[in-house]
Length: 465
Image (cartoon, rainbow, N blue to C red; front, side, top):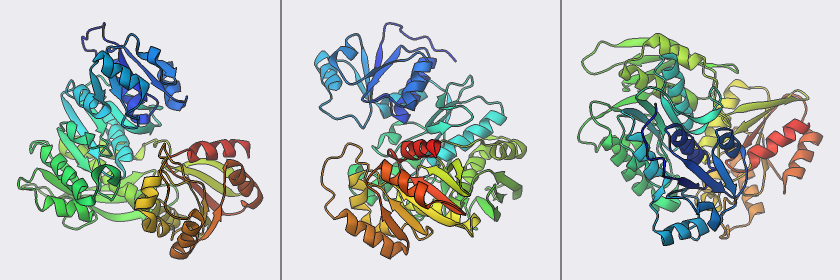
């Protein structure tokens, strides 16, 4: 799908190395835009951009935007950024990523927009897998690398677009959905919303934006979603979950180390009830069963057959950093996972404990953002009940410079007390590597968890074991 565009425009992405920014840049390049960008440090996203012949500058400098006509700015970029300030002086059009995403989505006729505090990357990827089996060839803009694409974004040839939309800065309200999924609402990104009530209000607006002819698929198991939909006057939504009142009800769950399986009982207004039997996914945990149910539900109302839905879910190849197995080491298994919020940590560890009943479970946890740890300190200390040990790494600040406000060693003690788990503090990557070499053998499950540098740490350590 090519769109006739003014070739004279040069669109510069400030912070192009982020997963969301890099994905959008790839799609815009595929659509025919002249795209370039800059970031502080090289990473895998930038490597993918360069393979697609997108120019990337390392470091933010005045000369980087000398020929640029439009700027797209990541929400992570500081207001004092030199490229941003030069663009303002030049009076260039400046767009936040969410604004530009909304403009691009408007060029494509039909979409499914996935949002929620947790699970949206996996859910978007699962929907993408089903669409691919149905040969709908959608454009996909995701928040994680889909293994079957080896990328976070893909330009399709159809009029469908599948989008993971980010609520962290409120930009998800700028996209106009045809269909939508809301996975859950949790106390997250309070630095932007100030309180949970404000966050819930934004999700209510998002659901109300979805047209009745399209429908929003929402998880009735989530108490915050339940509170919201009670106050929506026009019923433009359908529900999914384990609750028996769901329009798409999850039944007969089976879980093991290789896959999860469930039935989906479908009860739609004015239609006869029917069941999609034995949906199998190569993922563990109730949270992923819900993600798969959401994906199946939206695809069913769009009109995709039960056979293709099951095939797409069964043959799902996964997403990078979502419980990815890295190595078997002296009888122990090492995994990498993106979980960085208390709810995510609990769900991952609970799912692991359900299927690995006899193994010792060790969480290697790197807190992400000082603000998140301050806001959810107590919740974090209660998140590791399904772990036997926690290896606690230093905080990944993500550019935040203010003080934590409490002693980190005391936090470790409180975590041990509240989660009934042994806590080992490490100061850096080398100490973590030494601990693994000296202590890991036999039936143990190691899960590196966090949204910062911990993924690079554990991958590098695993390669050298």
